Image 1 (spheres, rainbow, N blue to C red):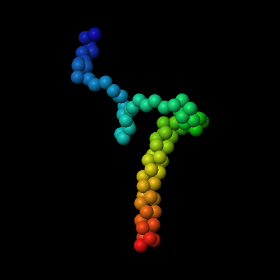
Image 2 (cartoon, rainbow, N blue to C red; image 1 turned 60 degrees about the vertical axis):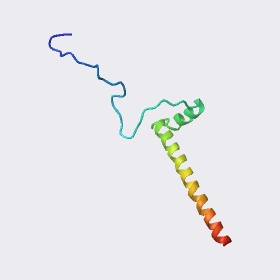
Image 3 (tube, helix red, strand yellow; image 1 turned 30 degrees about the vertical axis):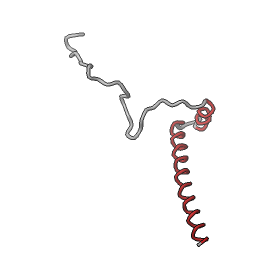
Image 4 (cartoon, rainbow, N blue to C red; image 1 turned 180 degrees about the horizontal axis):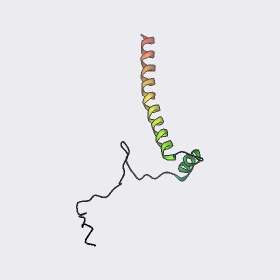
Length: 83
């Protein structure tokens, strides 16, 4: 080390991403090759396939949440009609 550069202490440093986006978390996930290829094909010419995967997962969650509400409404209607 040269005299004009201070010695840095990295003993308390933590490994990880240097730049993180708020609300995002880095994970490792294994996807089937055909699924990944489909998402990548969708963004050919521009875009981000990871964003599409996020959107697909959000849509799936929303549909499942909505399915419960629809089922409850149907049951309530049926019970009220039977009464």
